[in-house]
Picture (cartoon, rainbow, N blue to C red):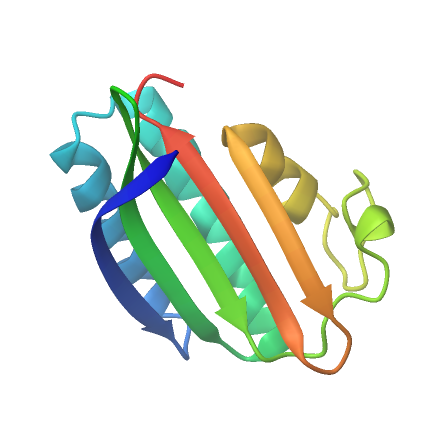
Length: 137
C-alpha cells in the first residue's frame, strides 16, 4: 500500500513554470535522500511531460507527492491537463511517434526514466499522467 507523506501542487501556464517545477522536484527528491542519478532521471521525465502539457494542452497542474511503500520512499508526480486528450495511447507510447515536429521520445522516454508510469486520457477532456521514482529505484 502506498501512503502519501507530503503533497504540493505547481500550476503550469507558461514555459517559465518548468523551471519552478524542476526546482521543486529536486527539492523534494533531495528531502527523501534520493541520489543524483535518480533525481536527474525524475527531473528529465518531468521536463518532458511538462513540455508536452504546455505544447498540447496549454498547461495544467502538477501534483508532487512524497510517497512511501513499506520502507521505500519516492516522489510521485501527477500531471493533469484539460487539453484535447490522446486519441491512441498505445500509438503515442511508441518510440518515434509524434504529432508535432519532435523526435517522438517524450512519453516513451519518460516511461523508461521512472519506476512507475500510468496514463489516462479522454479525448476532448484531458490527460492525467502519474509517474513515480523510488529513492533506490
